[in-house]
Length: 550
Image (cartoon, rainbow, N blue to C red; front, side, top):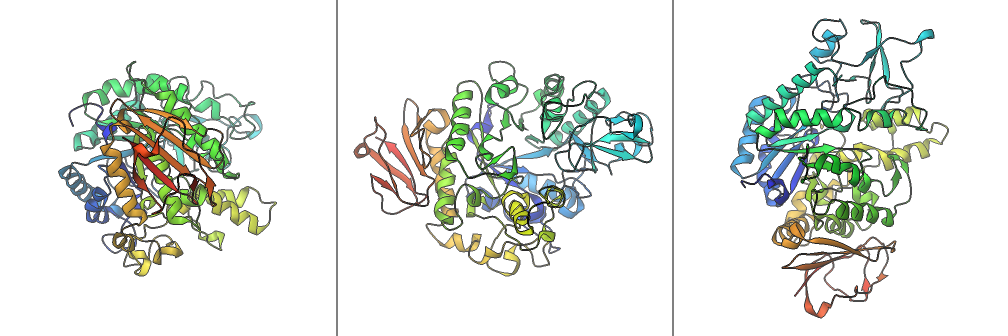
């Protein structure tokens, strides 16, 4: 691929390293395990890998608290193992993108250690403020993980800002020296051969001048003052001009609460975009409000609105990033599908997004229909955000209700080890695993699904292969049908060569279905389905079909 839009023809696989595969028998997922499984990833039809952080880290936020940007953690195999994986991926024609986490660093980073001691030039690398009179916090902003957004430091005798965990101190991106450090990091990995970056909460890196109190937001105070801040576009433009424009690479930005209109300010291809794609959160909010912990009944209409808004909003202007799972949300089968109809709903959910226009990402374990984890003891959770939620939020509810909040909302459900086989510890490791394995691993695992022709795994392979063969998915126009249905999601993709009709039932019951006007199924080929018998007037629970019009 020699065009600058090579990512538009790809399907990426996200690896959350700790839980993917242990290759050296110490209980922790690592790059030796990734190297073992490169052919497996390629067999899915995935031709790109996104690695969640591999850098040295104390592990407070599972690697998103980085203590050294220019190395690979020893627990994952170090730089030598990474270079072997990078080379192995490239030899297979696969791209590799890294996680770029520059809104904050670990408080164990050398920059922070020197900043708290006021050692130049690091004094202003972070956002420090003195206490207000009477010892009050510098402002009323909230952390998204733990309490308020400020932590007192006894060494410097000031507060530092942390929008996430207490041990994740926010960098002061307004300091040009910090931006130069970021550019050094980018160049280091691009020179090593990395093909791009997923940029973690990159829309938070510019804070409103003066850091004013927030009297607008009832919760998550400060959000409007640090999301899409005053200099964000300017700093992204600087990174693009000074680094990215000199490499054949792609950039994917995580952007909480972004709308298509806002996204176009960054990714509009007709206007010198500073980024290639943005990760929207709207498709993850069909069963909650703002946070996975504010659980609501699943609303298909809300999900469809999100899909349609992004498909139509970016049409002809910019490119969508498509996903239904990642490391930050519980498993989608347990949320939008059904544990009782696990295989059927996993296949349907795959179809619901894989035939939309954009670049799809598949999260590890998604391709076998892994489900949520339901521990009986809240102390078994590991995630810093989950622990805070249990200890400090909804404490007036019963123990049972508080535990259910974690079942519905915790990211740890997506972080249990990948279930490779029905052997001990799901074949993830020969040692004691770093984290708990989901109890359903004997039924839900890769080895078993490799042998079953109609497994979720083989369905993903077929769906991805079909997607790549259909020009109307890559280049076509999206249209939605049954707009007001709360059970059915029906859409078509049409270009000048092909037209497909995609049908997805989000119901656990049989549902009556009427073929949309303009489609004649006698002139169509059923190219993908998850039930052997199909009825043109009715859909079975979680049934999905893809028709190619002749």
